[in-house]
Image: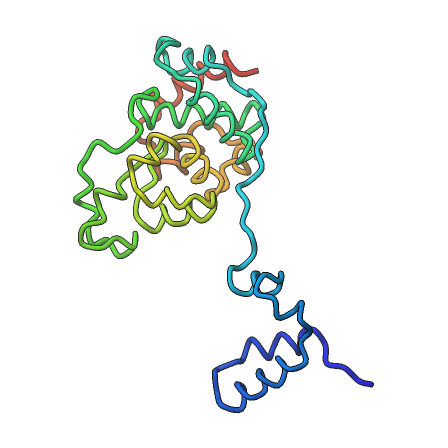
Length: 236
């Protein structure tokens, strides 16, 4: 007996438009389903309703950078850096595969410049300027909520939503304070991955080339180079 293919069967769902003859066909199909298939907890029903289960990208407990090293790069006292901050940074490095010495040096030197040596986790301006920015999917009052957060400032409702989806973390949409306090490195790492920075560095890019992609120009190049020189000494 000839049977339709899986692809042809899927097309029944793909082109379903709630037309009367389609509804009658669906009812007819239901008659032939076994009891297990009609169970609301069956795998196909849960998958159809909820979509595939998303998982947070895998991370390990590898310590790529110690508190002592980060303090040296940021040029601050170790006591100013908390253990959760170090944990978040190392998880970020694993998550986005920033795990070779050149990748780590460029990432930490660029984020050090962008954050004033870890001093600033969020944009100092009010964010009002981002209200009604359609390119960021911001509404009339979204600017302050979704202003720059993290060590490479994540900005705009659109970009927050992308990070939220990637991490499977709905709390990202709470806005700037949540991201700044909990995901300063992770949000920067997401930008790093999204802009293919690892590939650029693997090609042999220097501080100038990396800065141009991060900044869109050469703003702060001398300071970025300064932090990079420290990273050369600290990260082998």
